[in-house]
Image (cartoon, rainbow, N blue to C red; front, side, top):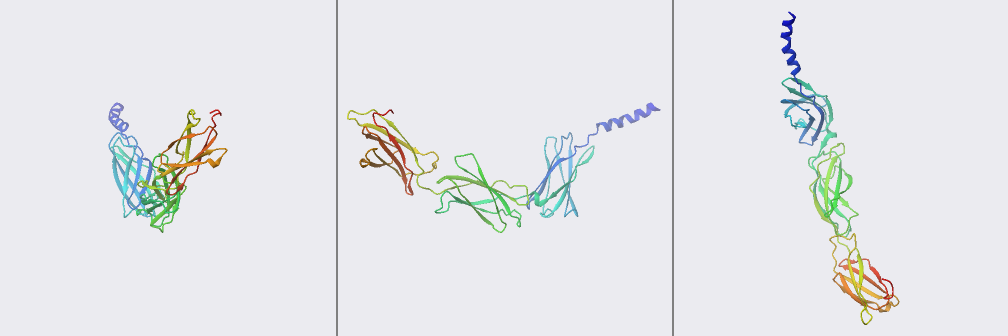
Length: 325
């Protein structure tokens, strides 16, 4: 009799031991893409068979409910399901519960709670222009349009990032604009003169923790200024038969000068240190000049200029012939 009962129960025990319920859905995360959809994702676990998911959402503060369904393959790391307007609106609290079902049974996730204002994600701002303001140096004004798909009653926080076109290093500033303005402006100051900058914006509703994507990058250039300055050096040649010395002067933009800086020409003047009355001056558009000086000590100065003014003066001393070089 016991032997017969054992034969009868053995297949049942085998069946129970081989049953594999789906993994419990974990790490549920939801984002409300404003006026588009509410999308929830979760970790489905490593499923060995076809699994179907039913996502139950309660809304209107728990008074109503709806479901969406999806399935997951064994290769997916995240599964997702979406709910759509008109039943999805902001200013609402909802719950999300994910139910996993395969051929062997059903298992449910923990119930999670969501405030849609706190998970609303807007579109990125649309930059309209990036331009200098006439007469204001080292500044560009950024104008943009508030995203249409952003909560109308919410102030938006912004991050503006910028870099020069020849740099990969971004810098950022943060600020808030109120919800009453459709077109917004921001004056970005403390920049380099006559330099091209790359600009991008993102935003987030004050109540939310999800930032928008970055806007499309736009470029703008600060106003031109007088030349920044020069680095000046010299090459001394041996004295000639008449005692005069050839001296090569060479110069270039000083370190830190704007890449786009324009120079119309250079003014050069020089004189023996003990007699300024013998000062000689000349202009050139070249970045080097050969002088023939006497044997005494000289002072040489070079200055760049353009249509907006003159640079600081770069000066060096040419030692007398008898001094050590």
